[in-house]
Amino acid sequence: MKKLTAKQIEHNWELLIGSIKDNITGDRKDKVLNMYDYFKERMLLAPASGRDYYHNAYPGGYVEHVLHIMKFAKQVAELWKKGGANINFTDEELIFSAMHHDFGKVGDIKHDYYIPQNSEWHRNNRGEIYTHNPELQYMSVPDRALWLLQHFDIKVTDKEYIGIKLTDGLYDDSNKSYYMSYNPDWSLRSNLAYILHQADMMASKIEYDFWKYGEPETAADTFLEGGKEATHKKVSKEILKDKRLSENMKQFKELFPDTIGEKTNG
Image (cartoon, rainbow, N blue to C red; front, top):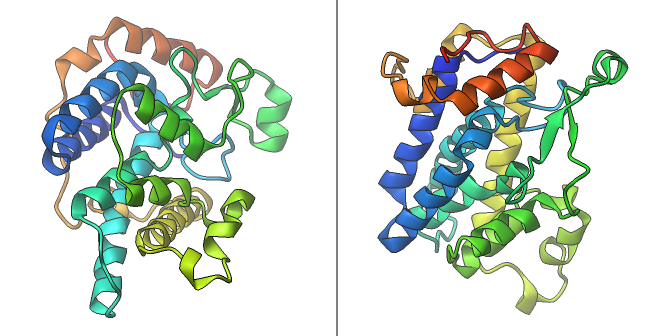
């Protein structure tokens, strides 16, 4: 299973926060930063899925996946634009929707969405590194994402709402009436949802390939930053000394001693 070091986890977090500062505007930026500060401890270690053969089922996997879909969303949108498609959404709407398409996997105000699978049998025989938290009220991931944004008073446009809701495409049966409407008046009026779904599929399938075949050396850091060499030298001492983060790392390593590639210093 792929491992992220504590430095890589922190570096990815800094990239995500930087993307908020660079792409979100107005007072919404401050509200988004406030929400991320609230969930910071949880998001740093959150996985993107629960099973090793899905995608990014390891500490830090959620943030890494979000960085991937934001990168691919920009590339896919540019491809659609070059092909002559109607691009009637802003760059901010594209990045904001990609950034929050899976935000429901953070959990709710008090509870994580994923918790470590304590059953050795399930880990070894079913690849369940994590399991869903039974303390959570059931919601679909997009519905929980939209609920959390509402809870933190973060307004979304109609395009962002539909984009986040429909990112999973027809993998979510509730999306069928949006994607397969036979009434032209009910068809989607923006291509944002299609672009986000394609970007999410790219990110998830490439992450799966990394698990199955190994990550190519050329993809290590440039995968995140579009060809620019990434460095992990600028590591926030504040994060590495965060006692809560250190305690979470310690707890996780007790169950999965070989998962996180580098310990933090408490």
